[in-house]
Amino acid sequence: MTPEMIADLKAIAPEIWLVGTLLVTLIADLVIGKRSQTTVGVLALLGVSGALWALMGAGPEAGPESGRAFGVLASDGFAGFFRTLIISAVGLVILHGMVFRELESATRNEFDPMLIGAALGACLLVSTDHLIMLVLAMEMLSLPSYVLAGWQKRERRSSEAALKYLVYGALASALMVFGFSVLYGVSGSVWMTDVGRAVATQWDTGSALVRSAIGMATVLVFAGFGFKIAAFPFHFWAPDVYEGSPTPVTTMLAVASKAAGFGVLVRFIDAVFLGETISADWLARFGWVMAVLSAVTMTYGNVTAVLQRNVKRLLAYSSIAHAGYLLMGVAAMVTLSGQESPINLGVQSLLFYMATYYFATIGAFGCAMALANRFGVETTDDYQGLGWSAPWTSSFFVIFLVSLTGLPPTVGFIGKFMLFKASLDAGLFWLAIVGALNAAVALFYYLKVVRALFLRGDREPVEGLVARGFMPLLAHASLLLFAVAVVYYGLMFDGLSAWVNSALL
Image (cartoon, rainbow, N blue to C red):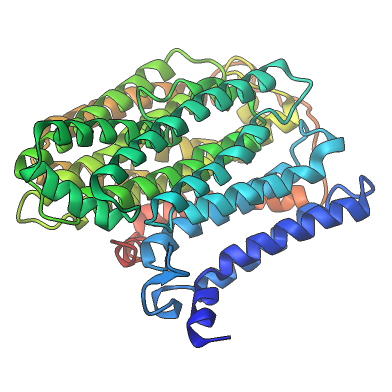
């Protein structure tokens, strides 16, 4: 084995761990059968922990000299940032899924391999700048997600969620691949950097037909990316799928899948549209489109969330709104690239906000799952007075919702501040104002949940099903850890900022 191959294998060590864990959990399910519903989950958690451990030694310094493992997978800090979010999020989903009552016992052991397969696809997706590898990784993430969305076969809404997700996903993938084929026709290459050079050249010197083809391809490609991040107008699948899927699957879609979508989106924009000198006219148009898309997405998500009573559906529209906030960073990134200021400010704000979104969203869905497990509740009407019956879980829920709103002293406040600052530095004053107004709207519907928990209903404790054992205790401890992290990084965010700065493209 050559030193180059050894370096390549070290760079993809986390993915190797995920593949090994996938095989081990499948074999364990065949051997153990249904006699143990925790053994497969524990093996999956150990494998995910091994992948995170391997990721610590798979940074740029441990990667191949070319910067790409086996020629197609980047080993930079940017990929490491998103791989960390994805793998850790899936690990927490596996942990919470082990204590989630609504997962059928007969199929619980197959649940974890599906999650690990989706995590593998997501990790490959954020690491590649090769269009064919990108499509394969996207499908490797999407196909298990379709199955997971319909996991509760006896639930009609779960089957409906899977069908809608499959139809929308197939259409979005077809549009994206068609867009890639047009870009390949323009550039003659499947590498993002080569496509970027061709786009820069053809936009400045090509015919009107070629420029129209580039514009059309951009729209088609962003249809695929927009579906994955649930951005308007490609968001229609999200509310029904988030509500109908089991809550652990909803958590995975809201965090790991969205992180993968934004990771590949930023890498694609940086390589194709910002890697080479392109006309200021193109950058101005593209930046304006991203800003408008950001404003419309966050406004639609927040305004529609006000009308929701089902907590999972409310958090689904909240996730759409946060996709709009994250697109503020994309808009600032594109706009600043046409100025003397570095584009890193836009990328930095996006990555930091993605980290804050990760903490708060996993925590919020975890609390919703814990309350559903214990009391069988789903709507804000059902939540009335439960804050006095489950004070710790409800208090954690409040902390996570405050962070999602963007109020101090939580880390969500720092994330929104960085996004607004990047928008102002990019000259997008109107976008910063729209973002601030949307934060006020978000406060209304997040506080609706808080009001139901503590200010409505009887204050007498209600009896509920209490899960006992080591795994439920560990799941609740993870909520405590995330609540502490949300407040700690809201006050002491230098460490988180340093990690984000090490991940800039």
